[in-house]
Length: 182
Image 1 (cartoon, rainbow, N blue to C red):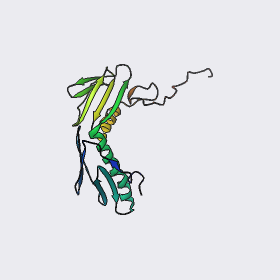
Image 2: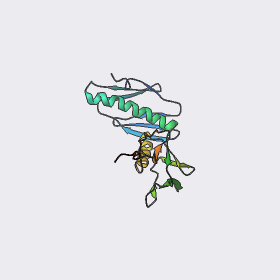
Image 3: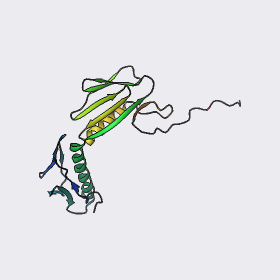
Image 4: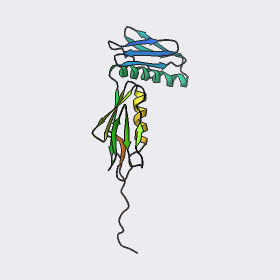
């Protein structure tokens, strides 16, 4: 049995979990999320505890067992506390500015890059080089953070680029100066 899949999930106060044959809906103080279920995976809500089980030990169902349990746990966390990713811009002239509900990035290209906030995600700009991305969907927050990072990933020689807060960039030594010889 899946180590992750067999763990039960406790439902905090103020959160409701509704299971239909094809979807799981989680509603809480911050919003509402929905996820499709997998065939052969049974989700049961009883006494404010969610348990997930599978019909057999086929590889597809074994993989889906732990996945659906993790997705439900993330939905419950999202509607209660939410998720946050922080990015920082490192480099001369690399800046971020709030523009309506989105942001405008200056990343050393000849043009500024506008990023619109998708539904359920908000941007907060700290200073001119830090971005905080928050939302109730772990997937949406992580995906928009990864998309922004991909616009100018940190390079290994000077470390310039967009990186996650606390990310360690492995630095390479540049070309060594010529030390004599022919």
